[in-house]
Image (tube, rainbow, N blue to C red; front, side, top):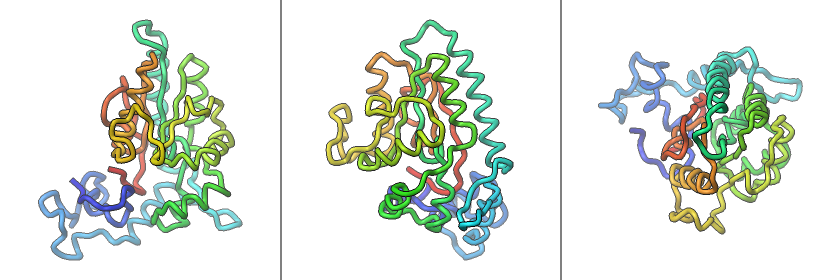
Amino acid sequence: MPPKLTSPRVRIAAVVAAAAVGTGLYAAGAATAEHSVPRTDREIPNLTHVTDKIKAYYGDTVDKDGQHYASPDSNYAQQVKGIRAKADRYLDRAAARTDHGKPAIVLDVDDTTLLTYNYELQVGFNFTPESQDKYLKSTDMDPVFGMPELVNRARAKGYTVFFLTGRDEHQRAWSVRNLKAAGYRTPTNKAHFYLKNKANPPAYLPCGAKCSTVEYKSGTRKHIESQGYDIVANFGDQYSDLKGGYADKTFKLPNPMYFLP
């Protein structure tokens, strides 16, 4: 289990040694589960090398303004393509069912529907709420490859689409703007787009402003299903997006850039 850290969004430098065994990227000399605290520097992957591998995985592309983008030909894009194909087939089969309530899908935002890669490179994988605000105010993130097509296709088949993100409520307008610009043709009003509201948490979350990611997301999915919906599929790039139940099936999108407990 990764060490418990104070920041809710654990950055790459803090988790890479703990995650190395699970990803298989650094099997030789990596810290094992028994040695979660490295005994020597040789057990810790070099951070520069980790960053280089991440950039190669995303097919790092730089435009004339120095902005970094993931390539549609990258291994990342190919992995997402395979996941999307499985999800499309599953949603097609599930759409024919008549034994559930109103069919719905739930999707996280960052690195599930919108790709944070350029932002992460800009801040050196060092997330802060201030830098995120500054970026979201002025810059639209690219969609995760193929996800607008999946979402729009699901909606056309009768699924109600819900977005569920850990972004703060004050970021709603920027997030809605970006989702529309990225090609998501689905309602993004408050009934269909849930953001975290620490100032005025909803009554359906018993944990209030102190919810963990799992409590917040599973509690919100429970609320959605209480309205007569059956969440046929739940999509997220973090396991904490997917834990806690209230979904028939989950789909995990790849993200080697950060870990959210």
